[in-house]
Image (tube, rainbow, N blue to C red; front, side, top):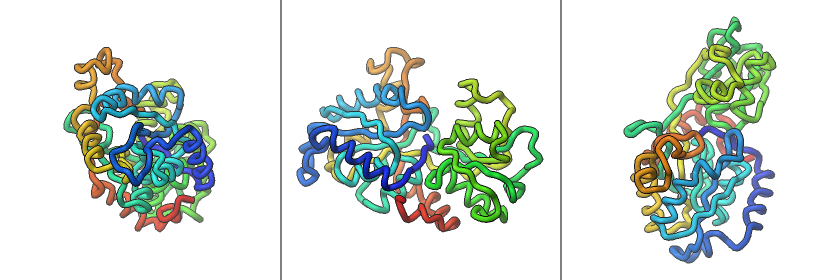
Length: 313
């Protein structure tokens, strides 16, 4: 749910790769409603092998609802998704909260429509954790001062942006008051803290509480949480400005009403509820979102003055 945004140079190469896949997936952006194929893009937060499978039931449902073939695109990073959407090569995308804010800043026509939730009625969102080894003498963010600290990526919402704001509020200069290390992934950050490569670090809640423990890479209690961010708006599915408004509404309604385990199982898109996957983290379904939900990310940008808040690279 909570991935990172890479550098613009990589994005350009990835966009070329998207374009080289064949004819434009959205037809001419100047002819709304003429799409023969809609491209759905996402990037993996960990392993990429099962990413397409995680969205298979939802995309099959979406094909039926729109009457249009959906092509899945496993993107290299969020910069590539932003550039691909701006270029008219991506129609629907799974963003991180921060990368969505960047995308919206470059193209106000990009529309957020839904975010994954774990149960009906849940509010979409998650938290960033400040973590240390269980036997560390660090008890709060003020204790990060002078230490080697693992972040995820300079453009990660929960792996850098919110943590940076937290450090500033705790009186720690994130540029000069610590030795920062960018691990490249939430799992890598947490594991580096567990192994002692970093004195402390940051990662999003599910990685620490569930995913690394379920995979056997961490033992319960091996890490200690010393800080929790305010709730971060959930990663949104967004639709390109190149998609005509009528089709955009069909897509939004499909996500809000039918992209959930109950409907997908009852309608035959999943064999059983237990086997039904909704998104990479296997939530129950999606809840509607709008742009205002991401104002919290914008406020954190104001606090941090992070260069990445105004630039892709």
